[in-house]
Amino acid sequence: MNRLLEMMNAHADPSQVEGLSRFFKTGKGQYGEGDVFLGIKVPVTRAIVKETWKDISFDDLEECIASQYHEVRLAALLTLVQIFKHARKDQALRQRCVDFYFANTAYVNNWDLVDLSCYEILGPWLLDKDRSILYDLARNGKTIWQQRIGIVSTMAFVRAGQFDDTLAIADILLSKPGPMHDLLQKAAGWLVREVGNHNEQLMKDWLETRYTTMPRTMLRYSIEKLSSGDKLHFMKK
Image (cartoon, rainbow, N blue to C red):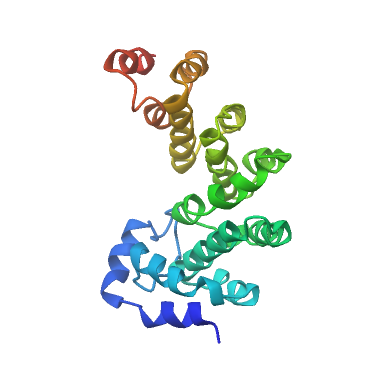
């Protein structure tokens, strides 16, 4: 019995489906095209995960992560986060969580699924390890979601006072040919801003040689918390 899946199905609310579908841009040509919803809001999903995560096996997670329903995939990822966090010194179990995540990035296919999982699992795992996998995801990820995992995972490094990888991966996204997708602009700008929250001068020095050619959405996200004078400076071409 897959208790997580059963409880998610039991909490389906058809009255919420239209609003969630609209919010996550599931229309033709939009970034979430074709995604399907049960109508479960995130606080409800979190409550279900809190109640069930200890009883969930990796076989259960395999079933849930491949679900057509957005919220069930999110529940699988939030459960994986809990398993990873509580494993603490069980490095074999933590490795299994990381391997599961990398094996299933095809299902981590919307911004909330990325943002609520990757820096809680991949970030802490890679704090004392080689981080080239994140560079590879940013540079060669087949989807914007895999590329977003590359930058958002670095949040854990920023919180640990390590800023170089965030800025280097932001540079990778900036150097990719063609226009940067809006959702990558927002993610990169958000992480650059997080660097600035810890070391504003470092962020401003980094921006100084890039701001005239950066996508405007990424720039606006980056400078959101700067003084009005600094914002005016960086918004000038």
